[in-house]
Image 1: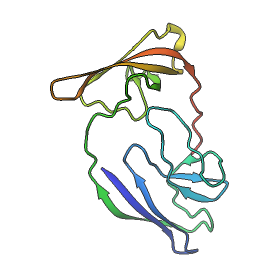
Image 2: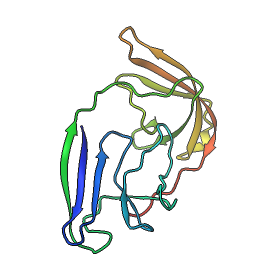
Image 3: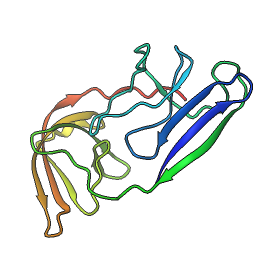
Amino acid sequence: MGYIYLITCDSCNYQVDDIVVGDAKHAIAVCTHCRQIRNPEFPYFRFHVPHCVVCGNELRLDRPEFCLRCNGPLKYRQRIHFTLIIEDRYPEPEAIVHAHFDGRRGKWEIPSLRLRTGRLEIAGVPNDVGNQVIEARVTEVHKDAEGSVSTLKLIFMRTAEKPAKQPQ
């Protein structure tokens, strides 16, 4: 489910239109430099920290309760909600993606990857990678008779630096 919000402050007339949440590409973020709420778009299949389109500073993912200008309470009014069609979202062959091994779940994760029933296979990953983010190249995408991805095969390229999470 996705939502579009109108965010307002009754104290100082601060207003943010059309914040999209829930579509796996948009989020609510705060620019502490500009003192604005932003709606960054995240690139699929990469661990990238979004930057403010106005000042270029890194954004902090947050859902603030108080106005960034006057500290008054913010109101979140849902303007619309929409159903997200569940379909496979995957990178095409030869694409370079980020991946991270989640030790608690015992499997690899790729940002924004959505496979209904498919498997993810990453070949050639050294044992000493641990919990580092890696870059991998998509080598094959196998689909079943219904058109869903059954197997997504990748090959390890190198380790990549995962952006540090900012305190919220």
